[in-house]
Length: 335
Image: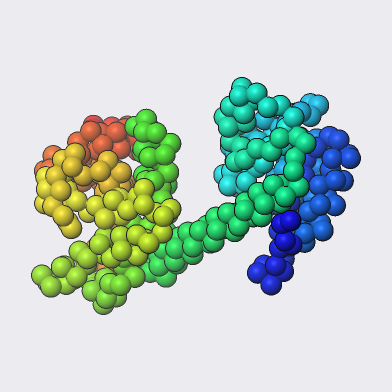
């Protein structure tokens, strides 16, 4: 028999949402799970289940398939489509055993299946395993949030870069969408944008805020921040898809950037996009070594730098068009 959960290992009992239109089935699962130390939340139809998820954020959902109105497939589909609920493990409990029904469940995003009538030891083992998985996912999310918060705090504690990373992240995502890039790439660019300057946490603030030109040694020191940023983020699995964006956002299309001297399409497209929006945001904000540049002048500078080989000309063209669409008064700019 599956032993009860160890109360010493958790701060509060894991919450299990049981969804079934059959009251007897719900009460059976309630008695079984409560006796093992779980906190059971009950729902008797699909709409009630979605409401309960918003209210209590369960660790695991045991979801009946055949319910009147909204069936289990649709409930699961809606949960997996929402950023806030997509990582909650869903176990579909069903009397339907044909392959087609399983495929429908997989397509809806179900994490596991149990056939009716289920075996108690099997159900308890699967619930315990998925509670553990959810705990690991929550720890990962916490690590992600800490890192994002650190990056944002780094920006907001610097009077010259106040909000810079968030602006770069959002404008980079918008440019990627404007260019028709897949949503996954848009997401990577947004997250890479938030964290692109995280390596500056190790940069000497006297160098970072120096009002005049940097000497060679100081410039070499500044140029380390993309590498340091990559090193900070590398241990976290969630950051792997956009580590290259953090490392390469200062590469130039002509190969004269840093840290690796990449050129042309050898530079990842996310880095090429972020390089343009990063340079634009730097131009339109006050820096210790110069005043901010007017928006239309900043776009013109970006365009001229593309002609000198700094930026991917196709990305700059799309960027100019996007900015022009956002700012009707800048329609006279020719990109």
